[in-house]
Every structure is written in C-alpha cells, then in structure tokens.
Amino acid sequence: MNTIRQINFKDRRAVIRVDFNVPLDEEFHITDDTRIKGALPTIKKILSDGGSAVIMSHLGRPKDGPTNKYSLVHLMPYLIGVFGKENVIFSDDCISQHALNTSKNLKSGQIHLLENLRFYKEEEKGDPEFAGKLSEHGNIYVNDAFGTAHRAHASTAVIAQYYTHENKVFGLLMEGEIASAEKVLHQSEKPFTAIIGGAKVSDKILIIENLLQRATDIIIGGGMAYTFFKAQGKSIGNSICEDDRLEMAAGLLKKASSMGVNIHLPSDSIIADAFSAEANTLNCKSSNIPDGWMGLDIGEHAQHDFKSVILKSKTILWNGPMGVFEMEKFQAGTKAIADAVAEATKLGSFSLVGGGDSVAAVNQFGYADQVSYVSTGGGAMLEYFEGKILPGIKAIMD
Image 1: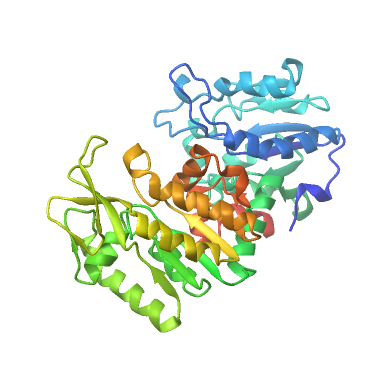
Image 2: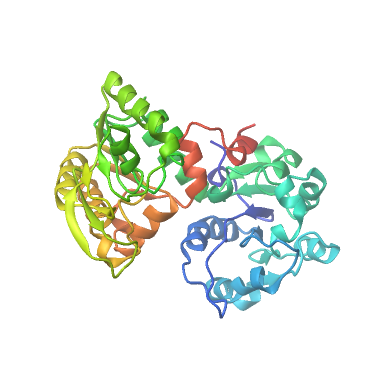
C-alpha cells in the first residue's frame, strides 16, 4: 500500500484531500471534531518532515455556489488552535490564481486551507480540467478522506491521474481504514459476528449478502428486523416494514441457513403506541406485536442473547443501531450492544464500528476508545463491505 510513511516531505508541498465535513452550530462552532482529529496525524507528519500542506475538503451540500453557511473559513479557529496563527492561511477560493500562488509560496511548516470544493459543480461531476487545476497546488497528492472514497469526484479520484504512482499516496487515516476493513473482510478470525441494524433492509441487502460468505453469525436489529419477521408470517403491528422486500428477506434467511450462517433476530422488543419520546411502552415478543404498537428497540432477552453471541466472537463488525437510540426510552438495546462489543474487545476480539449511527452511538455512550477501530466513513464503509471497489482507493492503487 502506497502511504505517506514511505515518503520524506522535506521541502515538498502536499495537497491533501481530507474529510472536514463536520457539523456546525448556528454560531459556526464545530460540534463534533472527529473527522478533523482523524486527519491531524497525516498533516502533522508532513509538517514535521519539513513539508507544507494544502488542505482541500467539502462542507455540506451547497446547491447554489458560494455561501457563508458552507464556508471552510469557519474551521480556521480550530486549525489555528492546533497549528498556530502564523502557520495557517485561508483562501476564499480553491482554484483562483491567488489561491494557487499562495500554495506555491508556502514555507515549510505552513498550511493552506482552500475554500469548499463543492462551491464548484465541477467537483461532484469529476471534471478533469477542475481536477487538473487542483493538482497545481502540490507536487504530491495525499488522499486521507475515507468518508468520500466512494465518490468519483474531482478531488477524490480524478486528480490522481495528474501524479505519478510514487507521488500519489494514502494518508494515515486512509491506511488505518483500509487495513481495518481488510482485516474484517479477508483476514477475520472465526467466529465472526456482523451486527447489522438500522431502519431499512434495502439499505443493507448487499452488505448482508456479501457477509454471508464470511461471517459465522449475523445479528439483525433495528427497524429492519421487522421486515424479516413479517417475511416469516409473524405479527409486527405497526412496526416499520418494507413490504416490497419481504420476498428478499425470506430469501436471505433461506440462503443463510443453507450456508450454515446463524441469523439472530431479536426475540423480544420494546414496543410503543406512538413514535414519540412520550409514548407508552411495553416489552413484547418481536413475533407477536399487537396492532397499533410498533417495535422501537430490542428487548432485554434479545440484549442477553446478542451479548452471548458477541462475547464468543473473535471478529466483530457493527453497522447500525438496534433501535431509535436518539430517544432515551429506546436506547437500552444499542447501549447494550456497545457494552458487549467493548467487553469482547477487552477479551481480545477485533472490533470495527462503522456507519454514522453506530459511530454516534459509541461516541454518545463513551465506548469509542474501547473498540478496536471506529470508521470515519459511513457510506464508504458500507460500499466497501458490499464488495465494491471505491474510486478514491482505486485512484491511488492504479
């Protein structure tokens, strides 16, 4: 794997694609700096070698060109806090002559932050000319944005064609993401348990199908579990269900059985009479939910069953919550899974947590530093585990 570890950046100018798409409050303060923190080791390595860094990223989904709401200028106080005021320069454009000149005049140890790439429609279109202009910012290209590796955008994939093989490399975050994903996908120790949650089966069909070839156990929780129950003719009340996916869910259960993969569905659920934090709740068998009630979390028996499976595992992949954990009444299931994964990790298992909601859950419940690896890429990780080749990774490998 071509990474920055193999390069001395002394007197070199690296253009780094990072994922600084962080949430901001109404005063433009960063409310979660996980993604920025993830890229700091790469930036620091380049600067400590005696190089300079040009940082490019997108922020949000601006529809109509430049707008203050999505400007990366709001990240300057954070970067100045880390690297010092004299070392960080901002340009209000990413391809203007002024921005290019600023990059070319950078001194060793300096950082140049470019304005939001998505202020140009050419970025998402993967426009080669736009990518070519971006490439003028540095004589070496570093991709450290796993969160956007599944997009064939100008800055994530197309730009790589302007660099020779030895001058396009992965950053430390990308290296860690790929190594962790590969460990789970291709070097997993058995038993290997995949915990798949979330609302919709349709979002997770491909990942489940790919994991049937690799996992010994698949735990299914969240709203998607009720589609599997209904596919077996069970009563799920008013629980979320994709009626157009019933046949597919039944097919997945059959396929798993024929391949000797254990599918674990929640034996009981916390059900509610409304999708609300104030709803009345009961504990009930997941296969016999009364009309007018809906499953919004896994129950205590399911938590216990799932925990025993997780603790026997040597490799664990967790993607998706067990319930509507944003509401306190329905977070016990997701919290129990986080606790079990942390305990298994302590006992020597390798655990990878990925997907926006699972990552939010381990952060919220304080388990982020008790699992082996927390992925920064939701959609990218999902596509990786579906077996797809990600454009951002392929561009460096080619």
